[in-house]
Length: 421
Figure 1 (cartoon, rainbow, N blue to C red):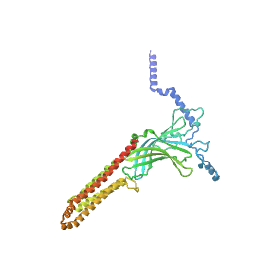
Figure 2: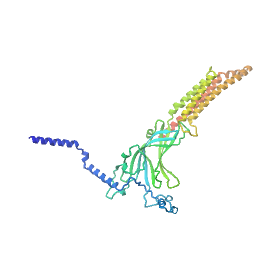
Figure 3: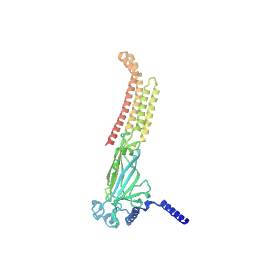
Figure 4: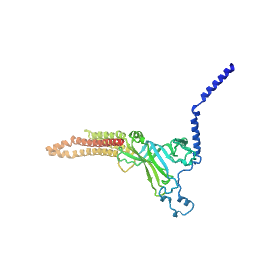
């Protein structure tokens, strides 16, 4: 009886242990067959594959003759022949950059540089199906391998290169996903600063290979070609309003001509910061300074101090603005606005000084004439003349300010129209 009890107890413990360590997924026949097929496919696929050798076909008849010491002048250079003239050679290596995400990081105006983070997918025909044995077949499913097993000409990625994966489809095409921060030179046009719009280009190429060896393509994911996606691609100062792609040809007039995959972004500045930090304070300072200069009862030195303080303030604002824009030959719109305010203040100082001299010269003459017209002129060159000049200068200051508001409204309408299209 005790022996039966012990045997039953051991069987129960064994079943519990097996159920504890048993993983149904590892013992599914289809899963084991899948792993075995993947292993056999990988061995067959990489049997004669050397990742350190570039699979790009770059045979040059002229280069071979020159290396062997023959006279190359009598040999027809391959660069003078059209693409695909050699029917026995493979076609150009296809390399595609597919952009599916972009984020604007920084725009450095003084250095004319823009930095973006790109999410890209590389696509090329790295592994050919003819390398496989006749009995090996690729289904419609994709296969995944570590990047370190594949020859790559890609861009430097944020992530660890040893742990990246590449995807192989049934046509022998390789797909590789990567994230990269790219800084590109962008020629800045600041004539309408701070309502300016910049067009910047981000270019990619394989500089080792010429266009006769590599054909480059560029594509943009349709899902990010809409205003809502553009809104998330910009930052607090710049808004992205358009994103296009194309392939440019860079010619050096020799066999090393290149094709460039170009992604072009159009960004417009958010002028609100400059409006409430520079435009509006300048308007207030100028308006109050004009009132202070023409203030009745103040002496000449006090009025002069008000004007000089305003001039120093405008000069300081110009210095702050100059640190935000490149040193170009054109005067930005905001600079024109500040310079006009500066000229208005200089005109106010000049008018006050001239009114003082005018009174000293004209009052004695008008008092001697004692005519109705002279009395009216004597009254006018007093306080009314100062008030009239103050009103005229204030109106010019307001007009200058409302011109900037008009540019702002026009900028908002332009951005809205581009976003809607």
